[in-house]
Length: 129
Image (cartoon, rainbow, N blue to C red; front, side):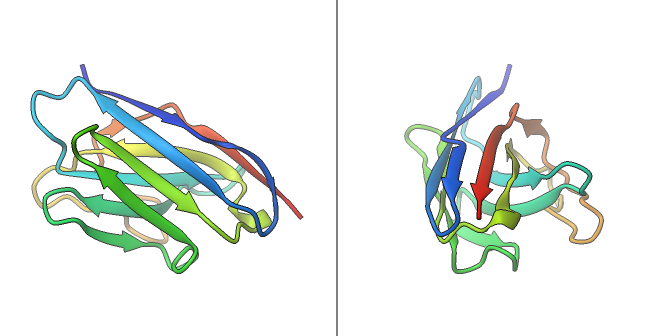
């Protein structure tokens, strides 16, 4: 059974940094993609970043471009999200996701839609201004 375990969340002041980790286990082979999403209370789920593990290609939501970086460690089946220059609007529960079906979309902006199959339990990030 595939499991995703996030860690690294916490409280930080605006302008600070945090690094989230997501460790995947239970795979018979490697994942094809891993991503990060976030959801604040009363708001729609947002796609933050994705890495396509075979190619290393990444995509980011416009709100985090230039501030967040997604990286992967294939040997450890782990993905990281380095978050710099944090803002109060980054406060949310952050979720890790893994594996897209063929022709699946990692995120459809405006709808919160995603085809990711596996999900972690989330880790809270709180940014105080």
